Length: 390
Image (cartoon, one colour):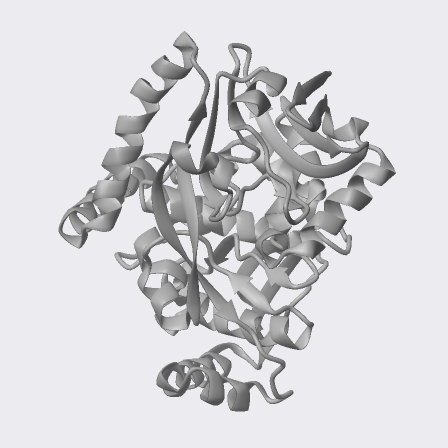
């Protein structure tokens, strides 16, 4: 499908219709600006979502016959669009060459969208600015190539955390066996263990169990196999002896690592295995050439401990005049507003967390059979506590 917007030619494609030259231009646009280096902005992530969820399209912006910008999106039957992977992706954007701009309403017409919803849009996408309803901190860690000696790196990077973390690691090694960290684990069984732990954590804490959705399980298993320059699925595991203690799966590009799913063996929660995992990942990622660890939007105590600075991401609804866009905003905006209000105020967030955990306890008690490993529960298990309990 082809449309015109001022001097910009817009064509619409399914992800599997994009040519090698399209992929090359998309990767070049990612490389041209650090704003677009996040692996969630890579065509490989878009293609994965389309393979397992479907309904994904890519608007390709051309100037003078050259592809200069790429907007991946999902579209439903009535023309409501959303950023690809909304609810899973921690970074969204129209990825483009420097200096490229566009008319947002013309873009929506070309995409046959009445509304385009986003919640982690890269700040600086000025054509979307009139449609942004909120801006939020996205903490990052600026990584440096560290020493081959992990304790030395930890004392230099996080002196306030080093003493207690190293003490817990020594205790874990004494109790279970020698500590071992694998940054890029290729064993699919370890990935299945991570998803089982994470699913149990979602249920304990009353959150939506993402891994109860087969398409998300299939997507994660698919992305685990992707090994490309701009997108590689990385599974990291902390072992004590031969026993996995904590695990994480997330994508990396050449320079940016995006933490995504972290979980741990709930029997070992008192060792703070999630925090150990994130510190080990940061050290290893820096040695592997990664420069930024983008922890994603969210007010969590552990992110404040580890961050070196913050990016900004935006949420909102780009619209053009249409009855569907008006109805969608009336339905979605109050829900978002309530969620953001609760998350922004500890006096509201803490009771909400307690309520969710109570619901999670009842749900787990009713569903968990005796002897199953995911029957363990801890009052410290909450998304608010971050990797200390994730």
